[in-house]
Picture 1 (cartoon, rainbow, N blue to C red):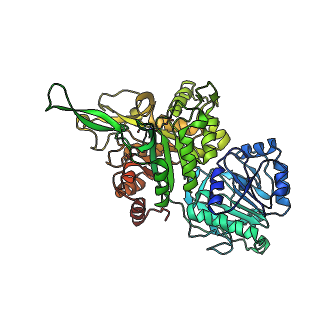
Picture 2 (cartoon, rainbow, N blue to C red):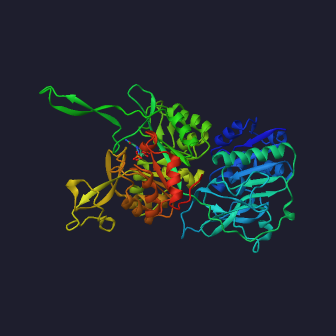
Picture 3 (tube, rainbow, N blue to C red):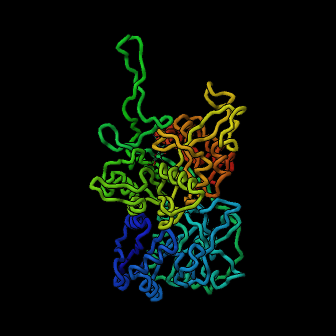
Length: 564
Ligand code: 1PR
């Protein structure tokens, strides 16, 4: 029996390959239409935009052979876009037709009451058994979802489509098909290859079932049930690694205090050997990125973030040391990986131009799930604002989200407080002024502040506020905001709730709170007080002051839903 994987060329397929290798199976890639004849089991781990998937398959002459393969009755497993293309169409691109096997259109989630994309861990309740399906989908596990379009589970309105439902998931008030199954066809909206042990179990069960030639019960024997209410969506705990080369040229995880990553060393001045001044020492070294990533995966992190904070500007794209880090991390980590730093149009040392899409694509191909854009997002929002809100489609956010989907694009914001006298301030950010909590430095007590965006790791301020940037990023097509705070970074004082609340109210995409976590209680309070979807920390996890499992336990005790 030959197991084949289909790569349509616009998504992270490496992670599925890594999962299958980890499970001990051999596989080949479909590289030409003829390969479909050789395949006896096929997995299509699609990711990204619906129309891009159909276009890429069509251009490579793979769409019709794929359809014929599925019709031949041989086992097919479609993941995310690989499942969505089974449907008639998608509102994401209404003029693009899917394979039409499931008579239903994928619709966008309603974002008036919840953030969209649906990004994070949620449960899937099997239709037939309620607890565990023969493909290993269990209602007590969590799976990683990242999508903006869903197939509504509607047994009364569309029984022909509902008969395909194999499990359902609830997000807000919407219940959708999280897995579909009919005969030889199986599909999952979630990413089993990114769903830790629970997801690997599903892949393994499906492969074993397919190898054994077992056919599951026909859906005609299924009783369509009314949608069940199960709020399984969890808050995410993210571990972040800031990666750069140290002075010896080794790639290390470092950690700054308010973005200063060098040790402070005391040096005697020449004037007096009793007077000492602080000088910049070596880059702080908190460990090796791949080893730390593996440790965080094993200790239950819901997601990992690797930020290339100096962008390794002198390497050609394919030699970027960060690509090797991501490739190695993706072999050991089966939860989502976000990669940031240097995601922009670049030029290799030999003069070859690399578009932001190419740069992002290189990371997706080695196992990244999302890319995070920092400085370029600020420039893009400035440009759109200067053009009176007109988008020209050229920014990295737009070009990458067009190909890979907005859920693959995170905008990382590095804001800094600007203190002003509220009684005299007459600047443009009056509506965003925070008449804050008494946590500002002594010299600024009694003042109000607004949050200014920065670029180049906080070294340069720009004429854009955090609210303008977050809203602009959403309009340009970002799927998530990673919200840092230069004032709080590395301080352990807790997250900046004023900042996070401001941004959370300004956008409808998910927001990740970052910077300042010092205790497990800080996570609980940021979830409770700001309603943020995810919280990220670096220093306390690197120094093992607080464990991820402790954060999860404290959250659970406070009534916050988190993944076990
Ligand atoms: O501008 O697209 O090349 O992206 C550069 C990326 O690198 C941005 O995401 C930017 O935030 C990040 N970055 C640049 N310089 C630094 C630095 O520290 N000198 N790190 C830096 C940002 C902030 C967080 C940190 C949290 C949590 N680091 O990543 O992990 O503040 O820390 P804590 O829990 O210890 O408080 P581009």
